[in-house]
Image 1 (cartoon, rainbow, N blue to C red):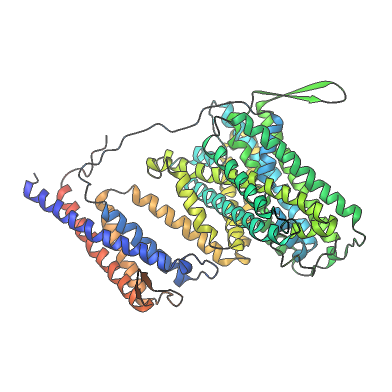
Image 2 (image 1 turned 90 degrees about the horizontal axis):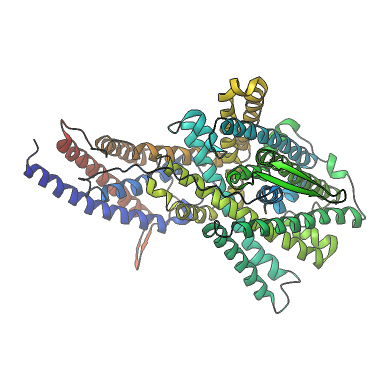
Length: 606
C-alpha cells in the first residue's frame, strides 16, 4: 500500500520536473526559431546533420512530454467509434472523371515536362509512356481489390486502407503507407503553393499582362479565387458538394481544351519543327529510364483520388450519346473502374504529346532552363500574349484542382492514423492544422527537394499498396491476385529506389521521417514507466553522440533572444546542458513512476 507521504513526494517531484522541462521546451523552441534556416535546409543532408536534427526533435518532444507529466495521476481512455463519413451519392461519371483528371493534370506538368524533355530528350517521352503503363496496371490492382472488398460487404476506401485490411492496423506496412502518403501529398501541396506564388509575384508582373494598370487587381483576384476555392472545399464540402462537382467539371474541360489547343497550335504554327532532340541523348538508356520514370511519376498517381470519392458516386450514371439519341447506363463499380482508366489515358496522352511538342520545337538554349514556369515561355513564343493568357488560366485551374485534393488527402491520411488509434484520437480534429503547419515547413525546402520527396514517398506507399493485393490471391486468382500486384509493386519499388541516384539526401530524409514517426507511434503506445526509461536511455545516447561524433554545427546561427545574442559555440554548450538536464529529469521521473506503480497495474483503462 502506498502512503500519502509517498504520493505527495511523487507529486512534488513531478511538479518540479514539469517546471524544469518547460524551461527546456521553451529553449528548444527558441533554438529552432533562431536556427530555422539551417534546420529547414535539406539540400545537403548528411549523417551528422541528420543526427543534429534528431537531437533537436528529441529535445522538443521529450521536454514537452515531461512538461505535461505532472497531471498524470488520472489516465482514462475512452473508446470512440471510427469516423467513416456519410455516403452522399451525387457525382456522375463525368464529374468523377474530372476529379481524377484534375488531380493528375496538376501544375507540376507546366514545369516538369518542358525541363525534363530538354534534359533527357527521347528518354523523357519513353519514361512518360512507362509511367502511364504502370499507372494503368496500378488502377487495375486498385479496382480488383476494391471489388473484392465490396463483394464481401466491406466499405473500404482505397489506398492505405487496402493495406490496413490486408495486414491489420498494427502492421508496420500500413503505418509506412499512411505516413508516406501524408508526406507525399503535403510536399505536393507545398510545391503547388511555391510555383503558384511564382505566377503571382514573377510571371504576371514581368509579362505584358503585368504592365497594365490593373496588374495588381489581377493578382488579388487570382489569390482570392485560390483562397475561396480552398475554404469551400476544406470546410463546406458536404454543403456544396453538387456545386463543387459541377464547377470542377467546367474547369477541367477548360484546362484540357487549352492544353490540347496549345499542343495543336505548336504543331500548326511552328515553322522549325525538328526531330534532332529525339536522338540527342547519349547514356545508359535503361538506368536513365528508371530514374526519369520515378522522377516523373508525380504526374501519374492522381487517379487514386477517384477511390477516395467512391461513396459520392451515384449507383447509376446515365450518359447521353449525342447524334444517335441513345443513353448509356453505367453502374457504380463500372464508373469507378472506367473513370480511373480514362483518367490515366487522358492525362497520359496530354503529358506525352506535350513532351513530344517541346522536343520538336528545338527550344534548348533559349531560356527554357532558366524560366520559373517554362510552359508560359513556350506558349508566349508560340502565339504571343493571347496564348500566354490562356496558359495562365490553365495553370490556375491546375493549381486549384491539385493543391486542394492534395491537402485534403494529406489531412485525411493523418486523420486516419488517429481514427485507427495509431496516433492519439484527438489528432483527428486537428489533422488539417498539423498538415498545414507541415506544408509551411516543407515550403522552405525548395522546389527540387519537394518534387523528389513527393516521388519517393508516393512510390514507396504505392508499392506497399499494390503488394497488399497478393493477400487475396486465392479469391482473385493467379493473374489478378499475384501477377499484377507483384509486377506493379516491383516496378514502383524499383522507380523509388532509383531516386537515390538523383537526390540521395531525399531518400535519407524520407527514411528519417518514417523512422521518427514510427518511433513516436511506439512511444505513444508504451506503458508510462517503460516510456520514461526509454526516454532517459535515448537522451543519453543522443548526448554521447553529440559529444563524440562531432555533429554539424558550422552553419548554425547561435541564439537570438530579444536583444541578447549568443554565439554558436556557447549556444550548443547550452543545448548540451539541457539535453543532460532532460536525462536527469527523465530518470527521476522513471523512478517516481516505478515507486507509485510497484507491484500494481500501471494504468487502469476504461
